[in-house]
Length: 211
Image 1 (tube, helix red, strand yellow):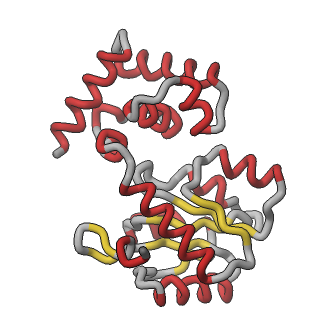
Image 2: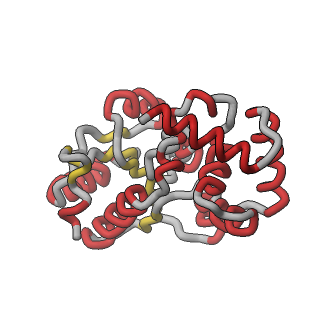
């Protein structure tokens, strides 16, 4: 099972890890490497995160939620490229933490301390979810025509491209149906389309040009 995730398009899967507890981070890095993943560096501060994203171009990001007050992993999740899955790491699994984390739509959540098998399974499932994403959705991250949209609006659009209706979109994104409809109104306005079919045609044509 793990062998299928360690390569993508013939290249080793690259993981970016951010955790302010350096000894823990180094241990996680070592574990991931024994599983066959490429983990070129460990980020130990929120301030270094953006630069590391640009250097590493990861296939997956592991984010510790508690980063010592500088910023939280939940906040940093908003900076992860839309097409890159991320998994939260945390020593806390209370309802409030899980609720806030869920709003970011992580590909997984691992509670510390964790066993090697738990980490391996979370990474594998996150990567498997990425591979199974609809073609249109995975192509949206760098489509110039969609530049006016916010991250959340793109997430709603991804769900729409996957042929989901408002109730399913709301459930997937941990938001209300009313909020989904408000996002769709903004998407229609920003992209200057008048119908859902016109919107989907725009996305399809734009994605096709990128291939």
